[in-house]
Amino acid sequence: MYKRLAENKIINKILRQLVTIFVFNASKRRTLRAQLLRIAARKDIENIQKKYSDYWIFSLFFPWGDFGIACALMKEFKNQYGGKVLVLVNDRNRKAVAELFPSIDKVLFINSEVYDYIFQNPNFKIEKGKYFEVNHWKFFDAPKYRSKNFLELYANMLGINDFLNIEQPIFPKEITEAVNEKIKKLQIDINNTVFISKESNSFDCKLLDDNFWISKAEEYEKDGCCIIFNSKKKKFKRYKTIFLPMAEQLYFCSLCKKVIAIRSGFNDLLGIMQLKNMEIYYPPSMFFKTVLPFVQMIEFKRAFYDEADKTFDENMYRITSLKMFGKNSVKEKIL
Image 1 (cartoon, rainbow, N blue to C red):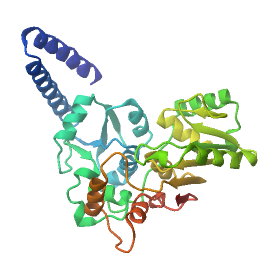
Image 2: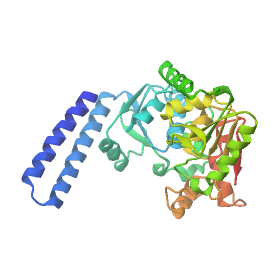
Image 3: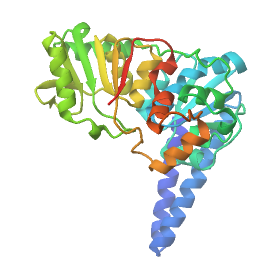
Image 4: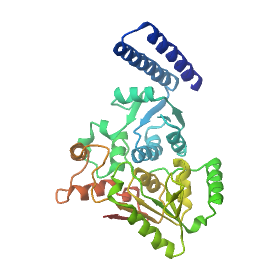
């Protein structure tokens, strides 16, 4: 499959060069190139469906929370409907995470053009051998259910009855060895380490400034804990940092004494793992920074059960709380 996709890329490159040579109008060149990419993407997904005609084929919505929830529900989906599951991803990081879930039989990397084609041409019915995008924005039957949280919403989309039967990831030897090697280089006692993650792609993490996280670090440092910040920087203030591929990061956190974080999709993956001793903080505003506030409000009203006596922030806390994954020792607080 990789070889065939690579061959298609070569053909597309040749066609684009021919367009450049023979089409002189810049606007027409862009239009023709876009059309060629679309035709190639459609052919690729048709070939995938033909090759995996006996699989349930899922493309997963890319935010980490949505992605992780969909992966964790595949076990129960197979329990109810049988067969094998193929998951399509368009980046290596997500491929590695999807492969942690044993019930996903195959994970296939697709290029961005194919991913975009699926996004723009959704199928609204789950059928074996046909791609289906697991994406709450495209779940048009959502108003029939009025789900209580995101886990229930995705279970309803997949037609799953027992949505609490979620699957936890299993870490292969290459990941555990890679993480253990990095722990050695950091020269830390991982069993006495507090992992602090102050970044979020959904909520506005700037609503909790650096002083808040430094105060948390100092609090646990006084108790003799090692502090590690999740950051691309070599150091955050005077503290050590680490920034790992997501699959490795999940295993790293499973070894730590405690995880302190702003609410993010990363937390959903830790919740699925039933990780103990998490301390999760929600920012003062529960509006996502990735969509306009009125769009988020419309989606909430459309897809979720609305407790009329609660504020929007209180309702958003309910539908995003990590308690949806079952009982654990997570501490959650809206600041």
